[in-house]
Image (cartoon, rainbow, N blue to C red):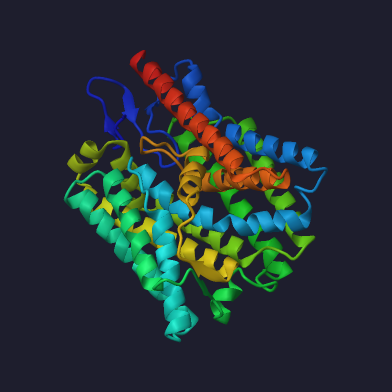
Length: 422
């Protein structure tokens, strides 16, 4: 792993740059050598290969379904089904940035939804109190996971696997033999469970437009800053192509939404969370410390970063986001279940990795979850339209995940060779 803390190598002109949405690569301020294939793949193409993959999937299923895949009603149903994956996936991204793994997010999500359901339906508490209790439950179990991982130094794989098993049993205990608990609270149901759970047109069009403008503005602002600092930057042509692609995809999605019922509340909540996590990662010292810790834990510790606090905080945030995903899922289903969906954990990890977050830590963006969840959701929805069974869906998702991880590992090796050859 390259060092993520800014500084200079002794007796050399190379400067190490810490950049929160790319690999922590060695940058050259006064001399730019010819780029290798590995550098071109990771530094210049960015998320374009994933975006092209998503476009290919959309085109394929649109053709084979005779246009049903992009019918406004089907598209709205698709988008309503993936906010849970996206919200849990955001938490997984934070954990992966540390180079860790969380296998408990699906179980935590259902557990927190069950807590909300019991408080709301059995104890008669207001919906906002039940939702707050669910979020606090998520934060508590995440902090417990973080304590075992950061303080006691038990591998995250073991801790979160054990937590997943324990929380799955706990939610069965809480439901006391009841397989399904119906949710009736109007506030909870209004998030994603009724025909009125959609934004008014002015917000449905205005908010996505604002988000796109902010994202594109940040791309060009970052380009300007890096160029002034003498750091490697993508070309204006590449930034323009990315901007056009984002505008086309978001504009097309909003047009489909508006031709049916509008933009769902759950989608607005998800993108609000993505923006908050993105700002935290890119605009705060806490976010930079997450990247530094994931890139090189020992270097971060020697630089004065409290890596124990960072790890506990990240696992706490991840489980809190899982709780938010559980609330949205319960609202959409109008109930909470006693069983954890066996494929949910795979889906959220796959969405993060397919979107471009490295399993090795220190590289990735909150926006990666958008492409990742769209690919996972599109595959599931498209295969369902073709009447494919669950086994076929899981086989294809597994293959796509393996390809994404393989591509990430290959790019890392190419980058390592390019640096060692300088």
